[in-house]
Length: 328
Image (cartoon, rainbow, N blue to C red):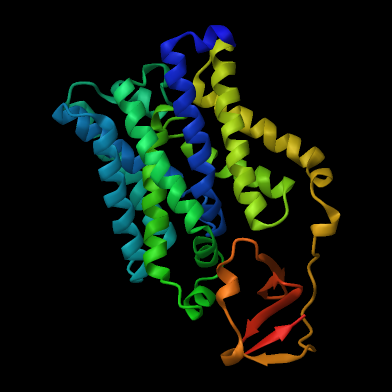
C-alpha cells in the first residue's frame, strides 16, 4: 500500500477513482428510481462523440466531452418531456448517434477506434494533474447539488405527479438529473470508462438497497459502497495488472453478491415497515389543512403502500388520496 501511495500517477488515480465512486452512485440513485438504469450507457455514447470531436480538433477531451454530453442529455430530455420521443427512442438516439459520430470523427483525426480505447474502458494511470483539478471541481458541484436537493430529486424520481402536486418544479429537476448524470459520466470516463460507467452508477445503488432501509441510509450507503469498489478495484488492478475499469466493476459486483448474503442482517428490524395492503378504511384529513413541507425532509421515510406511497414522520404514516389524506 505504501508503494502505491509513493507513486504520483497512482495518487492521481486513487483520487479520481474515489471521486467517481462517490458521484456515480449519488446520481445513480435517482436514475434507478426513474427506472432508467441504462441512461448512463446512452450518455456514455454521447460522450464518445465529444471525445471524437476533441481528437479531431486537437482540444482537451474532458471539457469537450462534458459540454457535448450535457447538450445531448438536455436535448433528449426535452424531447421526452414534450412527448416527441419515448424513453426507449431517446436512449436509442443516444446509443447509436453518439457512438457512430464519435468513431467517425476519431477516424477523420487519423486515430480510429483505437484512439478511443482509453476513454471507452478507462485509463486511470494516464490522468494528468490538470484533469484531476477539473474532476475535483465537477465532483464537488455534483455532490453539493445531489445532497442538497436529494429529497426533491427523490420525490420527482419516484412520483412526478405527486411531486407536481407538492409544488416541486418537476421539469426543471428532471433536466437537472440528466445534466448531473451527463457530467458524472464524462468525469468518470478516465476511471471505469464510458462503456462501464453505467455499472458504477447502478450496482452500488442495488447493493445499498439490499443492505439499508430508508432513502437517506441507502443514498449515502450507495456512495460509500461505490467509493469502496472504486478504491478496491484500483488497488486490485495495480497488483493484478488488470484493466482498472473492469476490476472496479467486478469489485462492485462482488460487493453486490455479498450484500445478498448478509444484507438482511445489516438492516434493523425495528426500522423496517412492511408492505400493507390498502383497504381504504382509515380516517381522512382534508388536503387543504395538511402541511406538505415534511415531504422535503430527508429524514422522512417513503413506503410503498398499495398503489401509492406513504410518508412516515413524527409518528404518523399517511398519503394523499385525491382531495384528502389517509392516516395509517
